[in-house]
Every structure is written in structure tokens, then in C-alpha cells.
Image (cartoon, rainbow, N blue to C red; front, side, top):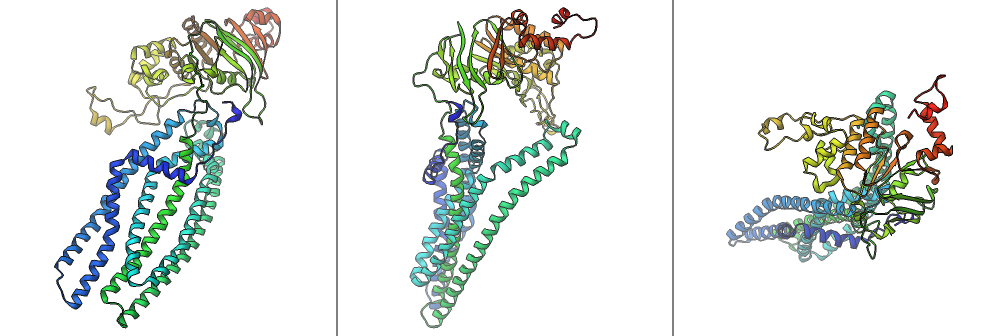
Length: 629
């Protein structure tokens, strides 16, 4: 799928979201759901049963008759009313935990299908993904709302039936008064969901500023440049915008609920007056009044609970639409109709007429690039910032597909190959490589999780990257946590005092930039025997001696594989089998270092410019400059 086709998929309807949520709940907790249904029925029936038992008891107290079984029945109902809500709360929480876990797993399993970068770089989809995460985490609220609707509906049916027996007219009045409340709550729930979506960019900006103020990555510059107040004002400004929108909605809810509450109180008061007059005229007994009052309160309470549950569920379903949309989006790079097998690289990788831009509104980044990366050789890509070097790497890894043209692996178009098969044959060190808040061993082993417990391979890769000694000398060696964000987990089963370790947790170790760069390189070396190694500025954080040592190690390691080296430092690419110069998205020069220097083109000018920085002065002759690096 090309970059132009990356967009936010349509939102499924509420009916689809409801069916999706019901299926998700049943699959995650079938037995627990059935148990909760039983508890909901008991909890709904108990108040109605208690009201009628109380009526009969009062009438018999006044008129005479046996009351023993009535008292026993009320006792049983009282126990049910005391115990069932607590059991229901526990079971509901358990459903929420199980459904939340299942939903979260489904969501992140779905995101694994997004093998490219387009969706993660689309702000609209990022907002949708954020709301999908909220919906997955809030599945407990959705389950509570659904079962709350069921509880309210069952209780309402019981009390409405009771009220109909006593006064059909009052039943109609009480129910009709509740209709505006239902419509108002549905309208407000839709406004809440719309506001949540609209505030997505605002909340992301607020989070961005808060991370700058408290995150370790920015703390040095923020403190040195004195920008904390500036960033704090920006963060508070975003919060004010969000609070203003929420305040407007809260005021609407206040007006609606206060007005409708007053209307309901008037209806209840009128009903009470009617009941008193009916008793005086002999139309109702004392027991009837008890049932009537309980029924009016029960109908209003049931309607209020039902309306609240409907509004909450409606809002949660509107949010759950985003969950369903993300989960059902499907891969951004659909598998080929007839997948081609990807054999080990024998001939080379060819870019044929490759052009790329992110969308029709964006400029071209690569323009008709023809390029061949031979197997068992090294190719270096050089050029100024913005020339298209990093984009070329993205295309080779199939984070994007070319807008025009094709990339061929021994003649096979990469779009005809399953993405996973391609990436199994590629290793890379990215310029913006990850520093994982994991142990040293895991930071290397995560390059190939199928062998993450192979300590011998991990140490061998670290040794090849020149970082084995550094990692061995850490407080816990390769088991040392490379982070100060978390506490290090205590070593279990090693003979240490676990209770002491838990009581006095220790933080990890933070490596230097150059050490992290070597760890990232070790991670790439750990993916051994790959056909293509991509090294994007692999030594930018190293000093000259470490850089020379590192490139010597890389040349030895990649003697039998195709290597693509991206670098601004031309002294690091001079030994490559071929050097490609990119300028404004097009190939302008290619050849060996000697050929390009002799050609006296852009590469030669850049090389002389960089070389002059190493040796300058009146005693340096032009020929010496070319030998400086």
C-alpha cells in the first residue's frame, strides 16, 4: 500500500460496535457473565418482591391473618439485598478485568499487522488509536453499563407492573416524565464522545509538554535554556482549552439534570398527594400505599438508573467504535495474492525507477532512482540532509512502498513477498535507534527474540560491537537494568535475599551515547546471517578512535553479506565497494572513493571540505588534505 492510500478508515455503526463488544465479553468471560446475569436478576427482583411482601404484611397486621412466612420471606429478601450487590460488584469487576485483558490483547495484536509506518505517522489515526486504547482499558465501564441497563430494565418492569395495578394514570405520568431525560442523556453522551475526539490533539500536546518538563530526554536542555516556565505555560494553556470545553458540557448536563430532576420530583409529589386522598376515600389500603410509594420511587429510580446506564453505554459504545475500527482495519500492507518465496540474496537488490512521496500534497523525496546493491559487497549512500537517504532505508525495509517504480530482490518485487519474510533477512542499526529500558542482555537479544536467552550469542555479538567489557563490568553484568526509570527486578532463585531486595529496590545504569550506539550495533550483529545489513549513521556518537575500531569490526563481520552504509562522515565510507551520492532525491554520482575523488564532483568537494577540518594550516599542501582521513 502506498503512502497516498493511508487514511483513517470509516467508523463502524453503534450496532456493529455493540455486537463486537458483546462477542468480546462472551469470549473473554462466558461463565462469569452467566453468573452475573443471575445476580442481576436477583438484585432486580428483590426490591419488587420486598415491596409486595411488605404490602401483604401490613394489610394482615391491620386485618388479621398469619404473618410468619411473610416475615421469613422479608428476611430472605433482606439477605439477598445485602449480599447480592457485593457479589455483583465483585463479579462485575472480574468481568471488567477479563474483558479488558482480552480487549487489550486483541488491540495490540491488531496493531502488529500495521507493518508500515504510515498509520503511526498519521495524526488522525494516532487519535483514533489513543481512543481505542481508552476503550480497551474501559471495557469494565462498558460491561457495567450494559448490565446496569439490564438491572434497571428488570426493576422497571417489576415496579411499572406494580404501579399499573394501582394506577394506570400515574404509571403513564411517571414514564412520560422520564422520556425527556432519556433523550437529553443520549444527546449529552454523543456530545461527550464528540468532545473526546475533538480534544485529542489538545490532550496530546499537553502530554507532549508535560513529558518535556519531566522526562529525562529533555531535562538537560530545559534546565540549561531555562525553558521550563515557557513549556509549563504552553501545557497549562492546553489544559485550559480542554477544561473550557468540558465546563461547557458540564453546564449543559447541570441544566438538563436539574430541570428534569425537578420535573420528576413534581410527578412524585403529585403521586403522593393522590395516594393520600385515595386512602381517605377508601380506594387504597395502607399496604397499597406502601406498594405505591415503593413503586413510584422504584420506577423513578429504575428509570434514572436505566437512563444513566443507557447514556453511559451509548458513550462507551461511541468510544468502542474506534476500538472496533482499529481491530478490523486490517494490515496496511496486505499480503500478496500469490506470495513469492524469498530465496537468500545471490545477485543483488535493484531499485528501478523508484520515486516516493508521502501523499499528493507532499513534495517528492525520491525521484526516479535507479540503483543496484550487489550481494556480498558494501554500498555507501552519502548526501546532504534531506537528500532522501533515510527514506531509501524505509523503502528497503518496506516501512513504505514506492509511489512509483519497484524494488527487486534477485528480480522479485518486494511487494510480492510477505513483509515478515523480507524482514527476517534484514538487519539494521537506525540513526534513531532504540534504547530499551531492559537489561543489558535483553537490549542485545531483542534483535532476535527467538534466541533472546542464548547468552553465548549475546556476549559474542556484544564482543563484536566492542561493548562486551562494558556490559560485563556493570553491577549485575549483563543482567543490569539499563534504565533509571524502573527499579531493577530482584534476582529470583540465585541464593540472594529476595525479601531484602524487594525492600531495598535498586535502579539501573544509564549508558553513554557511544555505549548505547555499540549496544544497538550488537543488537544488529545478534541478527546474524542476514542477507542485508543497513547501517544508518552507526558511528555518529563515537570518537575517532572508536569509530575506526567499529568500522574495522563491521567490515570483518559483513565480509559475506550485502551492506548498506549511510553516513555523513565520508572518511567512514571510503572503503565501500561502491559509493552513491544522493542529491535532492536523485542519484547524481556513483563509483569507488578513488573514482569519485578523481571525478572532482560533489563527493570530491565534500570530501576535501571534511578533510580540511582534520589538517589545516600553512604547512598543509592540497595533496596532504586528501590523505587526512
